[in-house]
Amino acid sequence: MAAALLTAVRTITVEPVMLIDGACKEAMLLFVENVQMNKICSVNLGFSPEVCANLSAHPEESVRVQREFSIFTFYNSIILSVLPLIFVLFMGAWSDKYGRKIPLLITLVGHVMYAGGYLLANWQTSWPVEVIYFVTLLEALGGANAGLLSSTVSYISDISKEEQRTSRISTANSIWFLGGPLGTLIGALIIKYSGYDLALGLVLLAYFLTAVYVIIFIKESHGPYAKKELQAQGSIKDESSIQKKDVNITTMVVDFFNWRRVVESFKTAFRKREGNARAVLMAVMAGNMIRRMAR
Image (cartoon, rainbow, N blue to C red; front, side, top):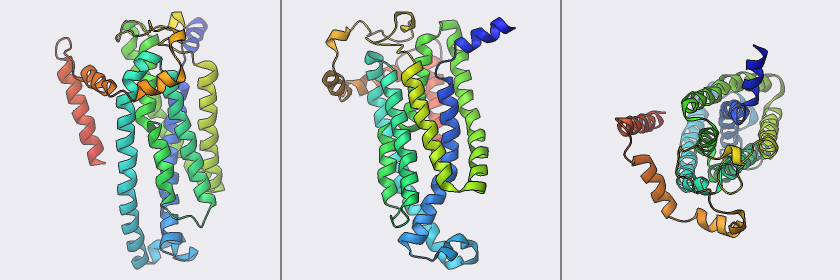
């Protein structure tokens, strides 16, 4: 029993990252809407703190706040949906060549700036809600949730044996979703007893420590900087034959904006697969799109 537990612990890699990210993501959902509503009510519309603290008792003001909030949410959601899609289309194929760790760190840096931006916006009571568009932009440029999930799933695929790959990816995704209720519970308790500043500060700290964990403990699994024992095990075309001496920052940045990377991403998604695998994949993609549209 102890040996099995020790073996399981040794196999842990990005799972803590997914747990913390899932918790922080759901906690932020509690925080951001309240910060946005407060900005719209007190700054953009200029209502008094007494009115903003009890909108249910002021129907006319509540309608105006809800109207402005709906408009803001519409544009904010576009930023948070379109840019991560572009990030993943370019970064997916790029990471197949250069590795998974850099995309993961980029996403976590975006998370850090997102939480930090909301904390700063909450401190600055005179800033209008439009400042949050820029905060959302920083998060979106890092790939947001799509960037984190694509990087972590790719990493697990790289380091897992073929017969273990599905179970490990399923477990990791379950851990990410498990973090949601934990984040909601902890976030609600912190708001109740301490307010939004502490809550946002703790999320910021959690994201920062997660990035430090990735830097120190997560070893590259693919590309020229990968450890030999962690090289991809046949799940994708191996481009890791590129040598370290042939790679520099300029090359990596220029290669990221190569439009052929987008073509490669679509080819990977729609290529023929054994049996009905492609049809199943298309159904999953369509179902997820419908789910997102219905939210």
